[in-house]
Length: 220
Ligand code: HEC
Ligand code: HEC
Image 1 (cartoon, protein in one colour):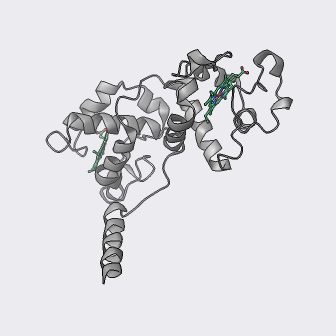
Image 2 (cartoon, protein in one colour):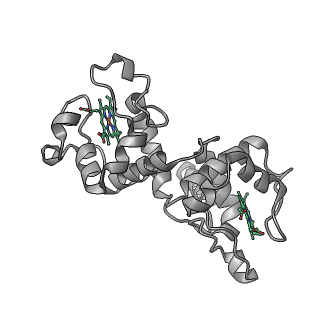
């Protein structure tokens, strides 16, 4: 009986927590989660090399918000995993074999390394800080927004297809970067045009800030 009840509860919890239509989390979003746990300590919350551990280190952690621009995905994979670092051009200057930068090959899967790289690229072109908690934002987006804005955020939701309307493409960084945080928050709170509902009263300021950050991380 006990097992039955537990099993039933588990099933209910799963049903409640699984949105009807789900997609894999956006790469940059996933990369940020890993970055916060594994890289922020040294490289800092915005990748500038000023994390809480940086002061204690002999070799400064790199300012990733600028260095990664000139690095290909292949090179970044080598740097992060530590596999084949010796073939990186200019390694003497950057001293990339220095053990100060840990080798992560046994820690991350290939997909996770891709996600980390996507987040580093996001950091290097970000024009606006993440103002809220994107993990809260993802839950709210799945609950209230993806029916119109689509599982990936590209505007291809079930409702928009049925109604024949086209919201903006939230995966396009050129579109979202053009709007500052306050502007996106305002459009969420006050709505826009005929079909973008106003969420004031349903969502509070913290919810909206979380959504703004999640929308930024949808960028591809
Ligand atoms: C213990 C501190 C530490 C942690 C944790 C750390 N790094 Fe580093 N990282 C460094 C240091 C120090 C360097 C500079 C190495 C050098 O110049 O020899 C570096 C360099 C790099 C570079 C090369 C920058 C360039 O282009 O020249 C990349 C990319 C990088 N780190 C990514 C990451 C990622 C991604 C994570 C998390 C998975 C991470 N690092 C975690 C200390 C750290
Ligand atoms: C009923 C469908 C619908 C729902 C639900 C919906 N949106 Fe929208 N949204 C739209 C449409 C359509 C537009 C484009 C409006 C326009 O440009 O006239 C839009 C525009 C936006 C914009 C402004 C971008 C721009 O084009 O200026 C943001 C930001 C946005 N939505 C966020 C959200 C968030 C966050 C949620 C969930 C809390 C949400 N939307 C829910 C349909 C919807």
